Image (cartoon, rainbow, N blue to C red; front, side, top):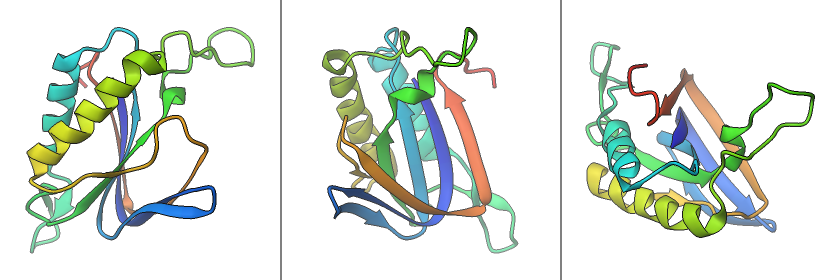
Length: 151
């Protein structure tokens, strides 16, 4: 499971010209589910993101978690995070999980992250054509992969 986490001052998701999710200060999480992912990956990643200390404290140091900063979260599914670009110019998505596997893990991730931060997690719609807007705060952008926990 791979996530691109962006600290934002605002973010929103639009589907078919309808705003389906919007937040102010918080995190935008782009989430890609891989065929090898399990519930263990979901639990680990949700807890990791919930505990990341990437918000500024009173002294301007990144020392607060999303919960401590009282921020919000939007999660957006993005299978392209598992693109393989080694051969040729057309990315391969062979490692990305098919919807029948990915959707339950995506939904479980949103639930587990919501529990970890003690707040509702907003989201886009799995598989939809979404327009995602954000103002990256910092900028702060992290990539976390449950298959490579040493990074």
